[in-house]
Amino acid sequence: MLVTLAIGCRPAHTPARQVATDTSAAVQPPQPVDAHVTPLVSAPAPTIGAFDVTGYFFPDSAFILEGQKLNWIEVVGRAASLRFESAANENVFGDAPCPTAIISRDTLDLTCPSTIMGQVRIAGTFLDKRGGYDTLPDVNENTVVMRAQISVRSRTGAVVTRTLRFRFWIGD
Image 1 (tube, rainbow, N blue to C red):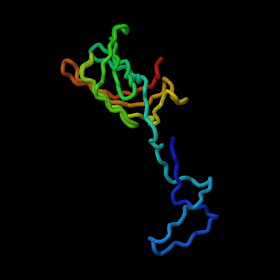
Image 2 (cartoon, rainbow, N blue to C red):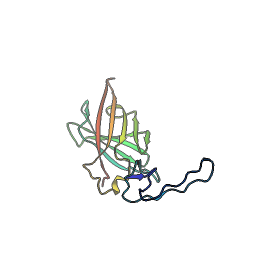
Image 3 (cartoon, rainbow, N blue to C red):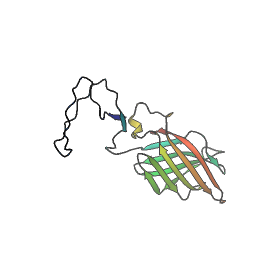
């Protein structure tokens, strides 16, 4: 949601006021703005209230390393974990906590030191800054809400980095 502000607009039919020569003198009240005036400045939505993105974030494309696939990122409040599954058998899976999690209106930054893939770092940016995705009628399991760079230092020492987009799902 964008909040628009009209700054410095005065409808043409409103007479100009005389301006005091002493700028420290009386302050002029704001001029009325007609509905037909085009706003000059757009400001982002206010950041009042909690930012909640509790749910699951699924990569838009597969991320497979050494036979393991990143299945999803789970966020609950200010905590996060990763779910992996075997690329060969989806019934073989495991979870890994991300003890270092920074979650804000702009950022999902996770460090997961011990996963089946190795050490994982996710540096994400929320594309939809509203949060509360589970309550928004225009967000469904096909809506991309985040872009993130995934960096993995595998158990063999190789570093793999890839940028992925993520879709949101609230879960069961």
